[in-house]
Length: 407
Image (cartoon, rainbow, N blue to C red; front, side, top):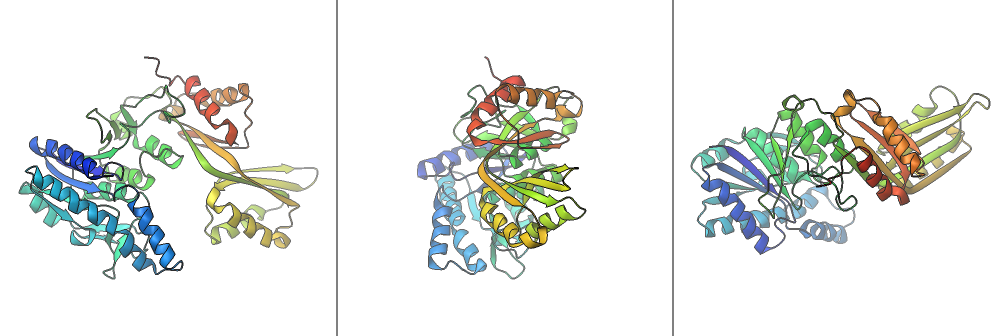
């Protein structure tokens, strides 16, 4: 007998028929003798509608009341799934975040989990009852409902699995695992049997939408066994595992891309100590996250250019901040663009396999794709390119690193 946490996202519980399908999947694990806790999201589209209502009734709304509103989507789903399970002979009850309780900080809208008291739930699981848990929510120090931010149900599931000492946490989505890249762009993309936490964390942060970044980091920290599976098939999924459990890898794991990028170049800054700190200090104070950075200085003119990438949503804000500080920064001009994409090659193999950068840069050069910014870490190389070359770059790199499924 094992203790399993299953998580089902919005598309998996998108209507009543899909909720009934989820109930059957839960029953399969129960019939196998396992203790099961199920974490669910709101039905697809529900949270967006709730957010819209909150914004329309008051654009400058109280964040505590916002959380009260948007947390109701999951409340509906846990009730419906509990009834669906009861209708097929499975003892089940719903749990809201405050009933467990899942204790968080008081940062409403993007709360962090501090503690989960799993004692009551453990008792019910031991009695054979399925726990159907509302994802995305908890209770703050002031006793108010909190929400964990977009994708928070993945985080809820991993945190619950850690608190329950679960043997496995299965994340059910509308895809049947983690692929070497987006199959919609590269039809020859392969499903991976396993991927390390480090690789999955890079893939998630670089644009892969299968798992939410916070949930992967939490699973890695608490050593929770993760599996990504499809809600619509019974095929095995992709296991996210610790690096120590896999043999030394000789291949790249995947090609990720993030289309929601923008680029800013500040032209003709004074080439002097502290200028970069001045630029990025102002942006940080205004909560603008910067990603890739490159600086090019000229020894002849004593001037320098700084180019960096950031999220498209922050582009106008960042430009406004830089322009307000032109007199202090003493730059000549500013150039910005949101027609850029970040392309990344990810794999543990980079630690021992030379030539990854060479292959990547040669492949893109052969296709006439120019690189605006380059960034590296121990297991990934990222470049910023013009958006029009996104699909060509992904497919070309996928083939160049031998990731095509030719079966």
